[in-house]
Length: 399
Image 1 (cartoon, one colour):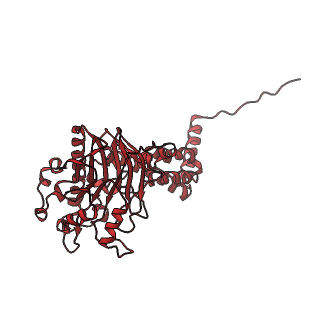
Image 2 (image 1 turned 60 degrees about the vertical axis):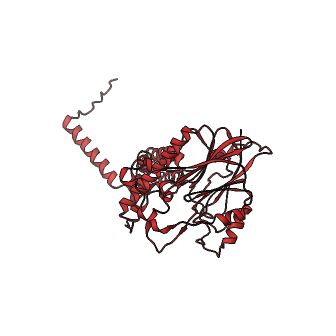
Image 3 (image 1 turned 45 degrees about the vertical axis):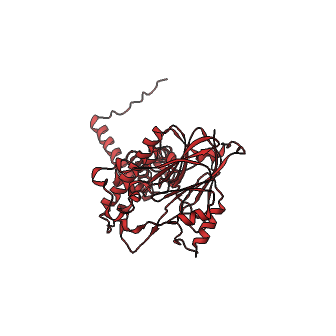
């Protein structure tokens, strides 16, 4: 019985090349025919990853990146999570594309403002000699600038007294005159007599736009000079502030207070707003949008440098609180001295935010201490229409 041998037809090199060319052409045509949702998903996922990488590199390095600093921090968590779902629409490349938002989430999570430590952190119990601290940006003191008023001066002081703190760190001790331009808008005020009347037994320390009230003994106080760290062209105090130079020269007041036999330095800070004029594409009477954003950028960095230098030379326990105009998303937060501990873990919120009060999208108000100061309670309270900032109320004591 004979077998018939099968013979495969031979394929020439020319035929192989022609077949490969047809295959490549078909693949390219397939890519061109991909639905618009695939192309859009690829663009969205890769663009957000590029933005997060650039933000990590450029934030706090160049003033022109400042407008991107004001993005709500929670976006660094919510956007990549949404894009992970979007990536699933790009079926031909979905697994590879998913890697982009996952990487963006990993890189941006520290910018998100999420306070994961509140899920497992248990604050220590307060001893009987713990003190109450309040730190608050009053939004131009007793001016009624928020809707839902009237919010009167008497009501403002009643609200302050009702917080019943041993130490108050208060910012924006000034009024604003919107009929003036730029530096001339911030008007000095003198309510010393009213403060002494409303807070009998408290020591009153006023420097620039910062006020510290203490019913514990004050053993010293000073203001930190920001101008030392400014570029030469920004060092001079503007002419409109000649009669109140600390409105320009200092953004931090330091008051040394005896707490349970130990000296604690309370840093009362209110930093300039982040650069944002470029986002509005708008010049102003105070200068071009570039000049204004550069000033804010340099002033903020100089304020942090002044704090860093003073903290490094200060042998006492330290409490730093106030309106730092800094969110978790901003690279400038890295300028907080390493010696200080972020007390956010004591907050009972997964996403603590302090501005605007009532809506709370951004966290601009902070509390840092040295490790030898303990915090048993930390709350962000609604300011009842007296300010656009929430009130920080803290129970603490020196170890």
